[in-house]
Length: 314
Image 1 (tube, rainbow, N blue to C red):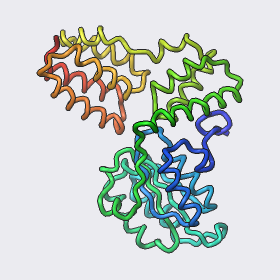
Image 2: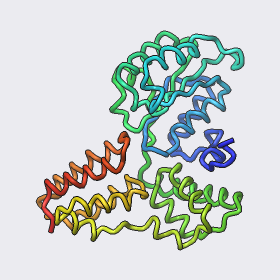
Image 3: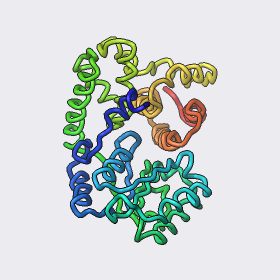
């Protein structure tokens, strides 16, 4: 089975206590378990932070029947919701001691408004028999009639919680590496976590990839270090589209969000001060679009092309 080999699945938490979460969120979720009743929920936060894991762990602890639809593929099609979700929601569970069933709509912000309107109708129609948990990266893409029928749990991490959760995850990762028999350098593991925080999924995927080709030591730091900004800045200043495209292709193995961030942080050095406000707007637009882009190369190159056309370089 895939879950035997993919670390993200193999070590996916099964209970809320095992999930790495801010204390206020964990307390809220545990109160649902204690009451034996889960409301319709909208779990919102950045990719990889654990929204789907939390939804599944919550249902697992409550012992309810669960049906999962991924909004990136099935959820956008009306027929899927009309048939599969409706059939599941309309029947009584024989295994959960009378507790309502739960439908998890993963990546609900990728579904169309028509699908969301139908889901809103299903929430009302099957209220006595079924609850809905929606996960999304951008809650502003959830229509208000659906949004208002859910309790919203925002997976934002700030302040001291960032440091605490990164430390908890660091210890969890070391446990996994020890169980997998992987030799590692603590400082390198910390650097990987720092590079992708709070995308827990990406951290585990990257560490598994590195572990498959050798030890997790300082030799991998070049893979996650700063990409070459000087070459990119020079080529963008020269409006050399061919070289900029080549740079994008060579560096797209890095997380697109990390690439955007590094270029964004470097713009204060490479751009004229008067161009920085326009550059911020361009970065914001394309970073948002990156969550839905089918082709990340095209989206990243479009961002850099707009920067070349609209901004002045030093």
